[in-house]
Amino acid sequence: MISIQVKQLTKQFGNVVALHGLDLTINPGELFFLLGPSGCGKTTLLRCIAGFYIPEKGTILFGDEDVTRLEPHKRNTGMMFQSYALWPHMSVAENVAFGLEERKVPKGEIKQRVNEALASVRMDQYAERKPNQLSGGQQQRVALARALVVRPRCLLLDEPLSNLDAKLRLEMRAEIRRVCKEFKLTTVYVTHDQKEALSIADRMAILESGHILQVGTPREVYKRPKRKTVANFIGETDFLPGKILNRAGDQVTVETAVGNFVGVFGDPDDSPAVGSTVTVSIRPECWELRHDPAERNTVKGRIGESIYLGEVAQYEFITGNGTRLKIFERNPRFVDVADRGELFATVLPEDVVVLTA
Image 1: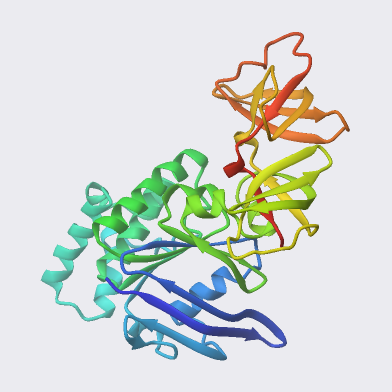
Image 2 (image 1 turned 135 degrees about the vertical axis):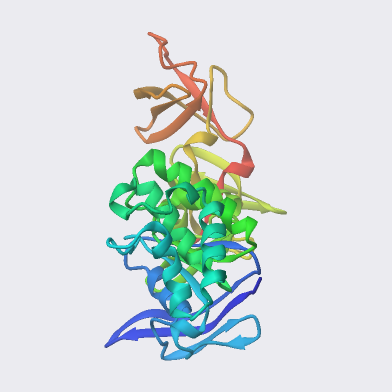
């Protein structure tokens, strides 16, 4: 297992700066996600780590080794692409063996390593088939075996599941995590799919316009976004503009158009003064609907539109001043009630995230 360090990395394409002096450390054996919208710089960063792009400034370290300007084939990384990139005229076994043959590995060892790699992704019984005889999920497993067979120092994945249907994506998420942990591989995984990242990442970095906005575990990033951009990109949320009324320890009271809320700062290093303008972020699933008001963090209103999805219902909650909030209720109680009348929505202080940026 190796660590990967990126120090002050800058990459330009003509006059366009794609990466702005990035600093990032990926721990040994970590499944680390680069997440963000199209054009944020995540694939550019991955390609710099792989050696396909040479940065204008900065350093990339694999462990203690500086690989910033090392050719891709000398970095010993395993790559897995969105398109699978399998040779159509070769069998599954031949596709997996290709990288070993290029490295002049002895034939006897190639056969053994190919068998082991295919067995690790549960594709050993398909060794003699051609890619066009496989499903999309099976082709992706072959691509994963091909990346593993060279015994890479790290695994680099670029949107590997985007061509699969929803059911196969779920299956392959778990498979990729299992294999990465089994082989103790440091893995960098690029995606724009937030659920993919939340479900299997050890940690993630959120990028925007070539900058890293936040690094943390899935729970840290989801529950404590440091910026409005991060809160908006990861999951759904209600944003309420407000003004700080007072602060007491770790908690802050904010006045909004629908009432006052006691909450916590998304970025614990923030220290805006009383009277400062802020934004309150509340996830839809954090609200609780009830018939009586709570002592604090309560909004009075009624349910407008509702969508029943089985284990959860999604409501449009209309407050007294006309503000519309999204509320997700697990094990729905109010969706089939003919006359729901006036209700109260309440939320815990730890689920009220106060953002200054």
